[in-house]
Image (cartoon, rainbow, N blue to C red; front, side, top):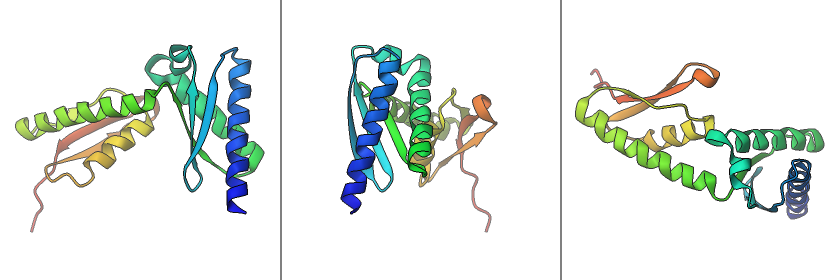
Length: 160
């Protein structure tokens, strides 16, 4: 029963994504895979990768949000779908991890906090998870909406 439901959701995600891309007049191939319970990944292969990714990933994030809302309306429950175009998310995640590693070394060395440039909620989450168990530094998000920024700062010594 569960496998049938998953297959049905996979097909819905693929069908809706293909339909959105057709409306955008973008030729693409869509492959959907289940990541875990209620989490899916839609990989899009297209010669128009730049168009679908957009500046700082804004278009791909909008496409992902739109897909999620349409799925919610059709299925009646939220299904998390990560949309990736040309391995953009994987490459971006690696880039963020490298940047954070450099900044962590800087913060450990100088004992001064560093505020990162704008990151999407998904990207901020990568940083928070990466630093969750770090011994010397911590991460904190401050602000709202597009003004929300993540700061990496030294951990304060524990008072005993």
